[in-house]
Length: 197
Image (tube, rainbow, N blue to C red; front, side, top):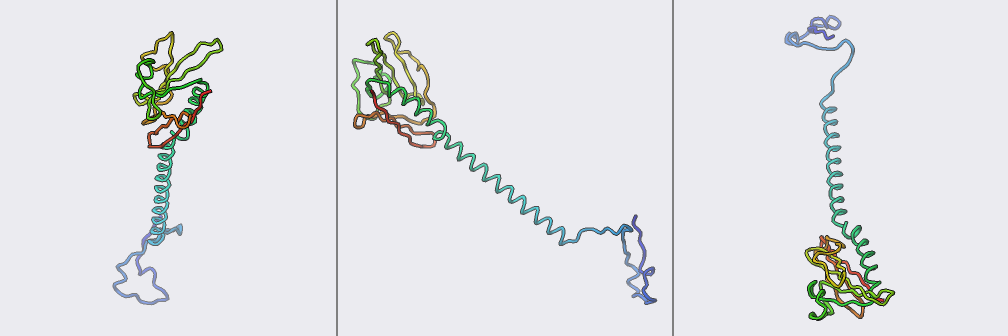
């Protein structure tokens, strides 16, 4: 509970007060509590500003690092899967021929194989029975696709998609090794090397 009293009630030792001081009123609390000073409020405000600035900086760094991680996901997540799959397929092949496109790779008699710059590689596998199977690994329509020849006929659509993330894929034959060069969504370059048996 607050009370108000004039300066007349607070005369000290019988001293007279200046006549203009009688206008002022002192307000105080009986419990002895006081408010915050301007310096205390300013210090608290500055601490809040520093803390909020630090939080904004940390949040922006977190967003930046998450974007970097997502941009590198092709290298860290997709590339090992592609490597395992392509290595398994290519290393089991008995022979391979590189062609400029999928249509040339499917046409056995009419197309001439190339040594570099191809977008398709035709793989031949020899079975234990002596028969051969054929498949094609090609880049078309923004994806690295796998085609398998069944009953002497190639299917119109890929049997499965190896990956749909690369911007491009090229096949070449350097020194007897099959080189598969993939360019990722962030222009990362990955090269896989395979040999036939």
